[in-house]
Length: 117
Ligand SMILES: N=c1c2ncn([C@@H]3O[C@H](COP(=O)(O)OP(=O)(O)OP(=O)(O)O)[C@@H](O)[C@H]3O)c2ncn1[C@@H]1O[C@H](COP(=O)(O)O)[C@@H](O)[C@H]1O
Image 1: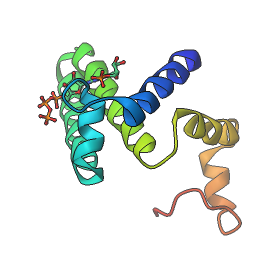
Image 2: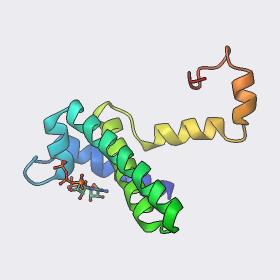
Image 3: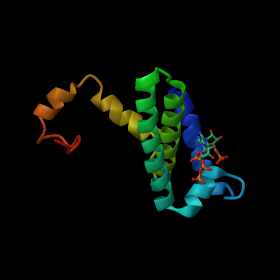
């Protein structure tokens, strides 16, 4: 799965560098700029929330999975636009792996992870 993300990172990077906005959806997002990309991330996040509520109600998960894929994809375009990629996020998740969120929260002050209450 990490291989797929690496391959997608490479495609996104090449679309950002070389592709024409008329031929590539990813290139068209970069051409429109960060605000358009952030608008898409926000829109997809809202769609994930709605699909999750539907899934809770009727047990149907396919739409939720599809909307989550849209959110991940647009988040990767956002990262690419700003010079980061999926491997940076995986490294951060790896750093956190095995560290209880509750323990981390109790130790906060020496850590930078999150700022919410
Ligand atoms: N994974 C994806 C992917 N997921 C979703 N999408 C596109 O995301 C778009 C947004 O979905 P919406 O329903 O919001 O579409 P919309 O309302 O027409 O969008 P807007 O007009 O609001 O921008 C759709 O056009 C989807 O096809 C994706 N487009 C591309 N990829 C990957 O990126 C690669 C490069 O794509 P291109 O740059 O288009 O070649 C592809 O080979 C795929 O691997």
